[in-house]
Image (cartoon, rainbow, N blue to C red; front, side):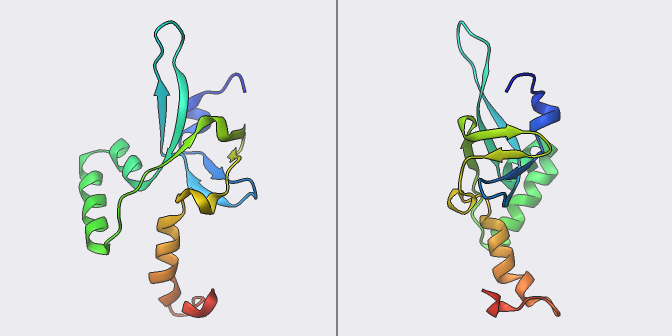
Length: 126
């Protein structure tokens, strides 16, 4: 994978697992600084708190308040960059998305909010 522009090609890109299931977007990157070599990408970060920190102070406060209100722990999922298969129209990972915790918030929203919307799938959809 040479010639990747991290901010353009990776940051905010759609993530898919090995079964092509969407896992969210890349919210942050971890770079490893090395003494005698150029920095390298160590991991991709997924989580609303990472994105809110990129946006700024008011978004961090809002994310914290909503998390407390709904009783949701703010969790950051860290995917080692070695698990990246391809970078193209999306970032394809060699992981099982359900085992990473990256879709935790979406699952909670489905179970507690979306299933109660009139005309929605209802709680018995599972």
